[in-house]
Image 1 (cartoon, rainbow, N blue to C red):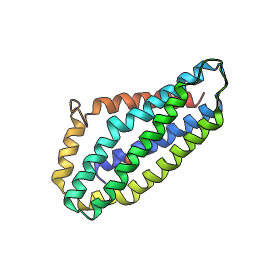
Image 2: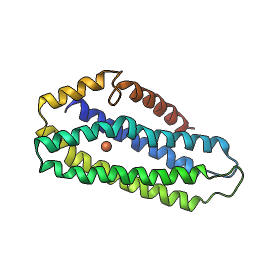
Image 3: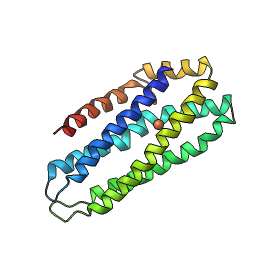
Image 4: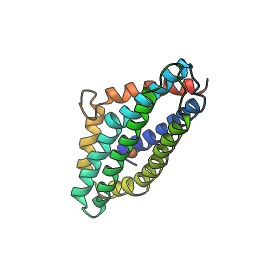
Length: 183
Ligand SMILES: [Fe+2]
């Protein structure tokens, strides 16, 4: 397996773990529990920004390469790109709902849970599609030069799109969130 695909799959596993923590924090959310609310907002920072800054740019690069090497296999691109947008829209709605929570005011927990469930359902089937169809197709059709370009950029911490600096920051944040999850 290429280093790139291994990283993307690891990102998926990390996202699943984070969602487990978020589920528990939302279930325990009560009025006036400001620490819990702070944790939820930090988790949302990860969920919104990590894919956008560190995960989707790599997938989008692979999708473009796949479309170039094998247009038929690349046809899945439109679907995946569309889902990236749908996921961003749902999570934006969720962030807005969380931002609207006023200290001490009643919390509309059923609505929060419904939006979160919609996000998680779509994300799980989306990651499954990527792992079952898109990643194997990329491994089959991309040529070594494609992997070389992206692996070099991933190792270059100064790279504005694939550089490891932001990735490292979010990995550190992930660790903090997981520690909270155990509390
Ligand atoms: Fe992905």
